[in-house]
Image (cartoon, rainbow, N blue to C red):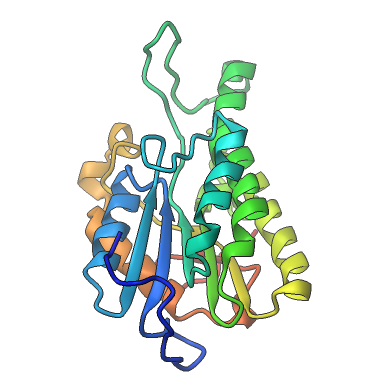
Length: 251
């Protein structure tokens, strides 16, 4: 975290962009995209504080422990409000270990199994939904953006190839949580911006089995693109599904 006082008064800027002295929170900060976002935010002279959360941070957030989400939000309330909150955690495949079988995205109906669906939904849907519940209240009332990483393959309208059942469904369900939360928050926090954010293909552990190193952008490039898009969002954009290049995606 930056050493400047997170409660220091800030200079207000126009609706687009973040104010001088803005505060940011990145969840899933141990992953490639999350770590790149944290690094870039800490290097931004306009950002006075960056909090990076993951399973081993203090406080810790572990989507397998529901209580950790509420506890982290309660502990960080003293450092609120935050002008930018991003969830960069996600699960597409899993390695075998600790007595459990690994898995890859399902290619056909015959591959669907309950354990894989539960693991995928826990990280991609249930955990982020609880973030919406507990962390949306930490947004700055005048300029607050809450973005949760989704995926274009979670678009029902855009699905032309099939496969990847659990991942697609978990992101589609996440999108519905985001859309519904944006509608509710519009009533109580009219300046809040809540969006689903598609990162595109990034060279990371998540994309490695799918030629991510060949076709993906670096985490640093992807983070810069997404942070620029988020800075340009206004309250009228809340409840949208946006891509790293600013494109609006179909649900």
